[in-house]
Amino acid sequence: MLIVVITVADVQTPTNVHLGPALVIAPALTPSFAGPRTTAAVGALALAAQVLIGIAHGGVTTTNHVVQIITLAVLSVLVVVYSAVRERRQAQLAQIRSVAEAAQHVLMWPLPEQIGPLRIASLYLAAEDEAQIGGDLYAVTQYEGGVRVMIGDVRGKGLAAIGEAALLLGSFRESAHRHIPLPELAVLLDQSITRYAADLEPLEEAGERFATALLVEIPDQDPLTRMTSCGHPPPLLLSPGSAVTVPSLHPSPPLGVHSDAEHTLDVFSFEPGDTLLLYTDGVVEARDARGLFYPLTDRAARWTEDRPEALMHHVRRDLLTHVGGRLDDDAALIAVHRTVVERGRHHGRAGDDGHRHG
Image 1 (tube, rainbow, N blue to C red):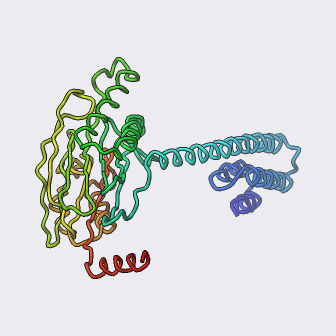
Image 2: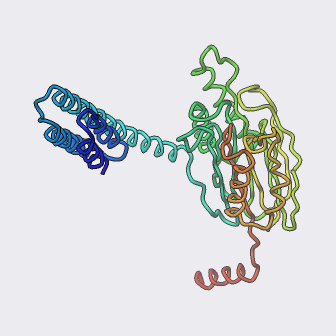
């Protein structure tokens, strides 16, 4: 349509008015929505229109029309070359993005929605564009009689912090299933971080590689839940009725700071019907336009009756609204809800099992 409009306008105007050079706009715009073949076709159509204009204004052999036709042909060829290069780079970028997404999924395994009596939901908001994960991390592992959860935050943010996050996740998954207390597990994680810093840390960053972590051990039957904090903020305990409490916590230094640090084991009651909300500092340190921190405790009190999936949905929407749609740091949350076991249904299953074995 653009070519037709320019051609008709040029033919209808006096011979001293030259609108033909404007035909180059058509092939120049085409790469924004089409590939090199379509661009070449539009360029050829524009060139034909330029020839038609030349015929209508005294013939194509005039110096002015010859120059216009040659110029339009050269520019159209250049636009087609640009379109081909752009299409190839877009294909390469799509392949790189696909590989990066696969690598990030392998690193940060999706958490199961249910493990025994626990319902689990998670939320991860990466600060860096085109990234799904960054310096924050979480993992859940079963052990005999319960579940162990880790949430952590390595120094830095975005893709630059993925190396340390991968190291900490691998160490936790390898060691969490062992029958060792949480303080000893924290020591193993601390040794992994320290070993990595000694072997791979650049000289200019000596002593600056560390990570905070919160380790939580949730038995299947016993409401007494154990946790060990390595410089990480305490979780929130959401109980029905808009009640939010912060379990007492005695944190030790972050991992990688003091390899000989003593780690404390704290215990609190995680009753059926409660929800345990674990988070990283990227959540509570998120600021709005006035510089105010996100009030997670106050906001969580609104959603104590919600299931973990709904809780994560509310927090995500509210947090992004608070910061204006973009975070300056990675943020991660895990909601763990202990379901209420119905005694009648439980006995029924036991009876069925006994009948089956009998």
